[in-house]
Image (tube, rainbow, N blue to C red; front, side, top):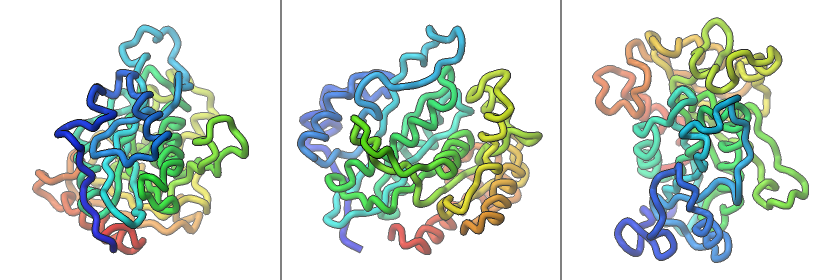
Length: 318
């Protein structure tokens, strides 16, 4: 593998075109940075944040929630790119949070761990409640399209763009895996010409089902209080796996009290039925939401090593 290292700012904590940008993903002030990148093809630095959409993002807001504090949130992509002369795989990270927030410990630290494996990474700050489906999915798919759109200038291997999600972010990651497309033929937005298909999926204690084993809070935040039955069936993701799904790595704890382990088991059964290669790891004891698990005393903390081995089998990373 070619030598690679972290891309560093020209000035500590900033770049010539990002110095004035706020780090908060809720502030819509990133359009100039994205335009600069598109125009010049410059390599973003570690932590550079760019907008997912070029103007007002499309989306669906829950009824009577227009004044909610997150109703004006701007979805962004935070980049963690390695300096390299050879294109590398990239993994888009989707933090969990019940579709009501995004957990910080499942965001930047995960991207930095992926960098340590020799992979580019990017954290997608997708929109959460009061935004309803398909808004989070559109944001996540947009992230994969945007990465492929900039693949040449960012030194990304466009055929190796994966997605990693935790909990409700795992539901979003599996949605990306299930509902990927090949892009639109001739849209006015060139990013939409790019595929949204994931080439690999990593799902960590994911929410999967809308059935008896559902995490009701996540599903209500995503779909609303009384969703259409057909939509509920579709977003119960064990029902929509196809042979086009990417190779998948799943892990869960057997005694997860928030999102039952049956969610991962149902998804793994669907992958098996569709003959999609997968790796499933069930650990005996871990609370929900341990993230990388570095401080966890039990065997669940070894999931990162198992995942690294799986990525090596795919010929991703070091």
